[in-house]
Figure 1 (cartoon, rainbow, N blue to C red):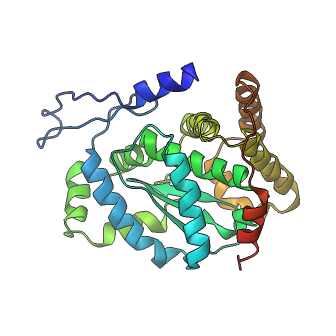
Figure 2 (cartoon, helix red, strand yellow):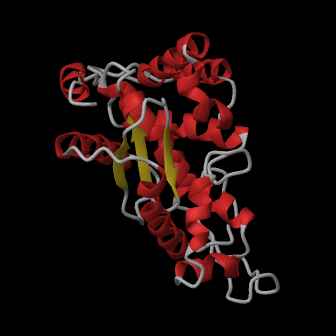
Length: 272
């Protein structure tokens, strides 16, 4: 796990660079996976994420089953325990939709679709999905997108409630081309790579992520309508699978890797 230890040291690296000529209020940076510099502080990101999360029920149907939600939170917490960013609280919820997708918002808000959950077979695969989204949060990909889309003062005004329509507008077009969650190819590859490391560190079978990608590939030809949102914002699935398989091959074999099929199937049976 030498490589994972190095990852953690990179993720906790934090530096401040003077940007007062650009942003009068100063600046803040948090070392993400690639050590990018951001216009939003971590506190601003969390505040923006909170406001965006309040808009989610206006655009998506939340599946409020306490047993299912508790299970998702439990699996998510296991991955968070291995991730490189613990300065924020993480929140997990389920969206009722046949679409096969998941997404995360700035500040640690993670959502999984029932359609996705019904199309995978065990906890290792589901943990891989959550790990991918948690990696986006760790790397602050959506915070970077938000900073690039809107000026700092516009975000700050919206956080303070002076522009209440902004976050609704953002969520309405979140997964469209140019929207908040339309990450670049490299962002998606990073989320796969480091999500895979979190899965491995948590003791899950690392083949879980490969299984998810294989399922997506099979659905691309059979029922692509359910993948519309995901395919619009992700690189070719075959390329993602090839990279993950290479990562798995480079890892030491886990003793008794977790699949937890029985509990996952029980939870999946509760989905609408």
